[in-house]
Image 1 (cartoon, rainbow over the protein chains, first blue to last red):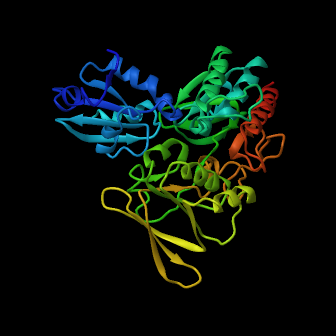
Image 2 (image 1 turned 60 degrees about the horizontal axis):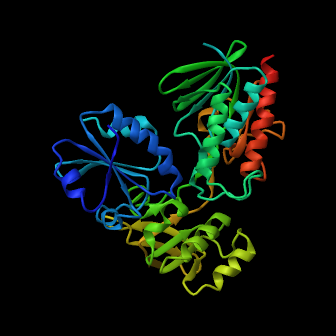
Length: 103
Length: 301
């Protein structure tokens, strides 16, 4: 499944209220390392049916970025039960992102 | 299977080397510990690479990566831990696997040096940043500090001063190594101030960065600067730790190799920012990649 575009309107329903863990990629169009991570995020989205993968454009959703203390991007966070349980900052390899999904 | 040439690092130097190795009719495996692209990925605009008036670092390096792949470059994501001489070739050991080649090109580049103070690691990504162009936008109308006295520090300060409330440049010496013209421009800005001849002691903050604590060299007094963000630009360190027992490095860790990119070990070449040299630009990385690629190809024959 392709990743889901998230904004302030659907964040509550899609991320906070989700029954399954949600991997959220905070990114921006001007951020090179974010673009590097983009295809990897999509791969994970296609490969993992046990989680939901979402993308938040920080330019369009500044309040969400501020709420979760996003100060460096790419910022990838794993949400469980409405809270961030793990996160990764920077353009890390896929293996590092998959570690976020290990219990 | 043994390759002709293994290239460690997939920035502009490594990818250019791959292009030349492949076009010389040899096989090339490129191994990268992070994502391909290198430091230029952080540059939103590149305007000094011939052939492009303006292109993003991401787009530029993506094009070069695709070019190398189209020529037959094999690419492996793995962190290289060591290189050893074995028989008439080399064994490259990574976290995931081991690889063999007749010749090796070290093109691992350099990364931003850390300040090495208390709080830096803990608050990294929570106000401490090593990339002003990546993270600067999160500090619109906020107070920031740039640590460093070189060109990168001055450029970062100039960039941030365009939208931050205030930028303090914090430097351990009185004098600056950066461009005098840039320094003059910064001194004329109302929202830029200088704290010089100090040692940074600590970056403090509970959940995120709140302030920087320093000691003044002249008076010995402690001082602090409140800030939302702290950008560290105190130079670079080459990523060469894994070959320090095999090839000659200078005291800063750069590979000692001349314009022929040859190291002291026959068959091992160095290209790009990890090589000891005066100018580190995209164009010189590409030039090194060319020289090292051709030399490695010739060595395998």
